[in-house]
Structures are given as structure tokens and as C-alpha cells.
Image 1 (tube, helix red, strand yellow):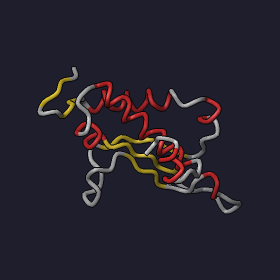
Image 2 (image 1 turned 135 degrees about the horizontal axis):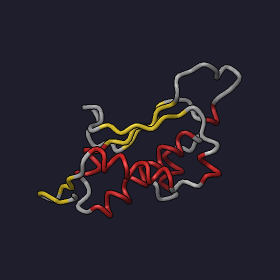
Image 3 (image 1 turned 45 degrees about the vertical axis):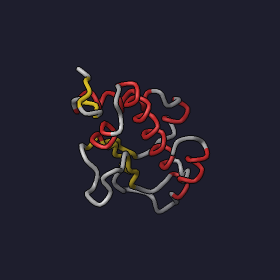
Length: 123
């Protein structure tokens, strides 16, 4: 049940969570097998101080983990439903934007910085 109202895409949380799951499924298994101690979440809105934020990686990238890295809580990737849907007018746009956001945040888990991601088209 996707519909637009005032150029904002309407999508239930469950539908959006499915988009995030599908984006994760499109990441090659060779990479997802290397992901370690990371959990992916969907939240409705980002922190109030960054209302346009589409996704956030919190944790220690794989490239920075050393011998000390043990017994820590999982890294956290959060994809924000509200700002993503506000910038998308169609389901296709939401699929694309969600995939770009998921790849962007997963790349941070692998230690890839924003500058490199922008160069690769995952701004």
C-alpha cells in the first residue's frame, strides 16, 4: 500500500524494514560473511540535532579492531525511515535510497570513510 501525499511517500514500518532487509540481501555474500558483531536496526526518526540523517554507523570498524576487541556490544547500523520517505516520491526511489544508505553504513563497518564512499557514488 504505497501512496504519495504531498510528495512524501507513505510506507508502514514493516514495509520499510523489508526494504532494509532486501538491501542487506543484495550485498554480496563474500562481504556479509566478513561482517562481525554488527546489528542493523530501523528507527522512525534520527536524533533531533540531525533531522535529515538517513543512516548511522556506531561502533568500531573492522579495520580498527585489535586484540583488545572482545566482549563488546555489537556495532549498530541504524536506518531512519522518516527522512528517507520524506525525500522519496515513489517506491522505486525509496528502494534505491535505502540500498545506498545500507551500503554506506555497512561500508563504515568495513572502515571505508565518507570521502571514499562519495567517490564511489554512495554519498
